Structures are given as structure tokens and as C-alpha cells.
Image (cartoon, rainbow, N blue to C red; front, top):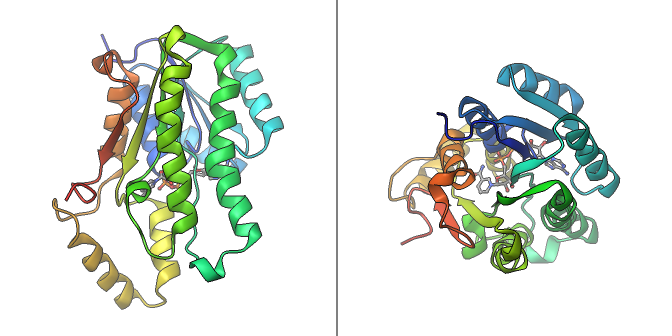
Length: 253
Ligand code: NAD
């Protein structure tokens, strides 16, 4: 019997990086997944890549009407949710003096407001005893320079996991956060290239970054997906409220 046999899962930001790898793994473990993303063409490509037991619903997590549309589609097709991976998130570098109101609203709008309403609006469809997994980050525990807005949104997410664990205890819904370190995804490649203009410098920056990771390398999206699958499944039946780091040890030393 597969680990997630017959489970219905929703994964926000499921068309790329960590979300896409997790959707692939959940389906391989026997689940049916709904994935979301903002761009229809990328969503369609991800649905083709996953191949079976998947529906793509174009929606922006910071738009509450889009979330209503997402859950209406889930309700119509499957009628319930067993697993929610609230994973969509964005981050752009800006030093304290450079932060603008627009930058603040976008980062908190997607990472905090979007994540909160993704979870809240899923609850009517949620099965008692289900699993909610939130994507935080090692950034919540570190002072990554020039990244204060992103770091603060991830600290808020870690806090949500604690409080929602007790808010949802009557329903036996488990809530846990995953905190990835440096994972090789389109988003992390983009932020590296945004920091430095030349290939050579980018390689140097990567080397410097790797020297801070005890395991000495960047992680793969599937290494996070494996942990999401563990937290989604009955293998983690006595785990709730935690922050599970998937960071090669970088935030542990
Ligand atoms: P990615 O860019 O490959 O994926 C991000 C996903 O989020 C995409 O599918 C994108 O469509 C979606 N998304 C962004 N804004 C959205 C919105 N408003 N509505 C709906 N979907 C939206 O990046 P990733 O690295 O796989 O990031 C996934 C999560 O992991 C994010 O929350 C990110 O902060 C977190 N994270 C990533 C790393 C890393 O090194 N890659 C480290 C720590 C945490």
C-alpha cells in the first residue's frame, strides 16, 4: 500500500521548484493533487509533467476570490481535502533603506496573508485528522542580509504553525512547518543572479554559500518533497507544531 493512497492534496505554488517536486512525489505515493500557480502556461506544463491524478487551478494566493475559486473546484471534483501544502512564496532582496511600501505589500501579501487565507479557506473541506504543511525557511532563524521582509514573513509562518496546532487540535488536524535551506529551484537561481551580474561572480557566491552548509552542497527540490511526504503521511502521526529543517545543517550550527 502506498503512503498517500487515496488522499486528496492541495499544493499552492505546485507548478515549479519544491511544489512541483512535491506534487510528483505525492502522486507517486498514491495521492490525487490539485496544484496552483499564477501563470496558466506554466501550470499546464506542470500538469503534463506530473502526468496523472492532477488538476491545475490557476490562482493567486494573495487574491481571496481566486482562493474561493480554487476550493470550489476541489469541492466539485473531490469533495474533500486530506493534505494541504501551503508552499507558494516569493522573496526579493532589498536593504532596509531600500524597502518600499509596494515591496512590503507584495511580500507580506503573498507569503503571510496569502498563506493564512489558503489555510483558512481550506478548513470547511478539510478532513479531521488531516495534515497541513507550511513552507517556511531557514531565513526565519537567520539574519540574511538585505532580506528582512522575506525573513520576517517566514518567521510569521513558523509562528502560525505553533498557534494553528492548538487552534485545530479539536479536529486532530496536524500543522507543521518545513524550513528549507538553499534548494536548487528557479526562484533561488533567480535571486542569485539578481545579486550578481556575472556568471563568474555568481559561481563564487554559490561557493561561499556552500561553505556555510555542513553537507557541502545545495539541496534538491525532491529532498524537500520527501520530507513533505513524510509530514503528509501517517509516518508522522505523532508530530505536530514542529519546524522541520531541510537545510544540510546550515541553520543548525
Ligand atoms: P519557485 O519559484 O520554483 O516556486 C514558487 C512557486 O510559488 C511557483 O509555483 C509560483 O508560481 C508560486 N507562487 C508565487 N507567488 C504566488 C502567488 N501569489 N500565488 C500562487 N502561487 C504563487 O520557488 P521555490 O524555491 O520552489 O519556492 C517554494 C517555497 O519554498 C517558497 O515559499 C519559498 O519561499 C520557499 N523556500 C525556498 C528556498 C530555496 O532555496 N529554493 C529556501 C527556503 C524556502
